[in-house]
Image (tube, rainbow, N blue to C red; front, side, top):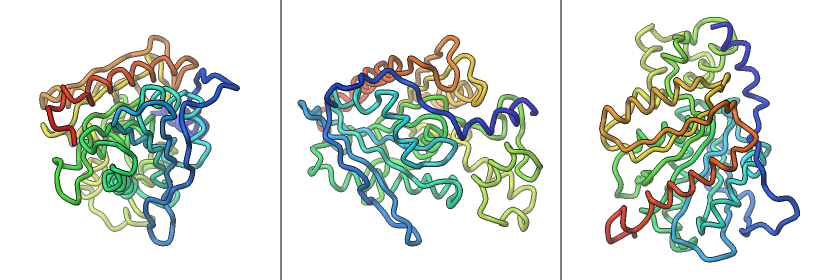
Length: 305
């Protein structure tokens, strides 16, 4: 427990390192700070990255969140990892969505914001030339947690409330706070890890009025690995073999749950990789290739629209 408490504070300073070419013209046009929703007077924003070359009719919703904070600095981290460059060069339109931060919202509220963003994209699919059935979801660390949570709890496609996606690719996501690297985190205890979970799972002061059973149920409600059903979309997880912030066990737990429900899943382990690693742009390229297979017309039938 002490090991995780020592490193959890470092989550606030984690940056996605990459090898984006400096000085080169970007392969996209960028539209910044698009308001996709408003919650209690707070605007929720996304940036749209549209390929300057040919488009493949596929879209990616990128959940921009680090340590469950979604400021513009986290967006720059994804830029450094060549995420937007790599996807757009392959013809994808990317919607870099900021779901809000834990200072104002719980994990369940942030997950709902992601769903709202997905619906926003789908409702404007003709504007962006993106087929609704060829939409993927990505995220890293806290963003990977929220992406995974949304993917396994959004239900089947169809209808105005449809927030489903066809495939999910995530880097080093927390997936199970009940068994976090062998530790059962108690949100009522002292320490930074418990405090983080308390803010994620409960509104301010709410935990004081709940029973032990209610506390346990709420924590489970934000654990993607404990919510998987057979309706979940295919997953790709990429995790560093020496990640000291989010244990590799968290991705393994997700893989076990997905396999138990016969959901297609692949886990790539980066040998020696931390949280993240300097050459992560190489793994972003692997992720793009994986999405190519998952979102192709052949893999989804003859009617991708």
